[in-house]
Length: 242
Ligand code: HEM
Image (tube, rainbow, N blue to C red; front, side):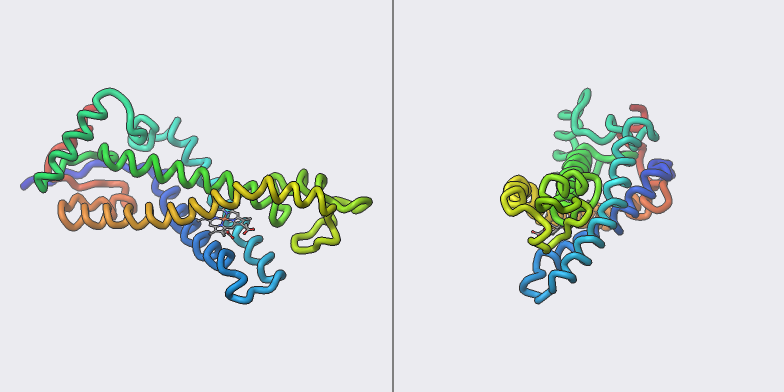
């Protein structure tokens, strides 16, 4: 069997991937504690520290993600939307072919994402984007941090109080009616953020299972390719000449 080496993941894509892994794991860990803060007996001061730390890691996560979404317009061929989104000419045929081969216990080599992998990556990027957007809103409504914290504090500050004095868990610094309205607006945002956290746990488990199973069953070192940028394939990839 002859093996060939193919360059696939460019440096920005690999940096995004591993920085994203670190941020998402950190956000999940802190998020789990926030979610269970009351049963863990965390004080209000402790909650503010947890949420502030979560938001600071969240900024790195959101900027890294934004950069990846831009890179998908300008980056290398396999990092682009055309190689990610599950549409485009012949996509359905390629997907059917991959599924057929899978049922037969065979694999179709791709230099970039396989058709099935494209669905997985799209859903992951979408979920991460929802998590970044809802998180940035929560940063404003919960701990009055940028980008929306200033405008929210202005709207809910207690009569005669400077908005910069508005503090989390300090009801005396807010106007009760305006605060209640803001919390009502926030409600679907936190519900979405919480739901996506559970969806992400499922997606990450699926992602890990898929890459480990592919690596063990078919080789092609797709895990180390995300470190080295290179895949080693035993037959020419189906997307070689696209
Ligand atoms: C993969 C990304 C993320 C995950 C998995 C995640 C997870 C979580 C979880 C599980 C909670 C607790 C929800 C609850 O108490 O009901 C939470 C709360 C929160 N998250 Fe995130 N988060 C992510 C990204 C972000 C980002 C990017 C930001 C902002 C920059 C952010 C800001 C917040 C804030 C302010 C809260 C507190 C809301 C509250 O409980 O009152 N999150 N997050």
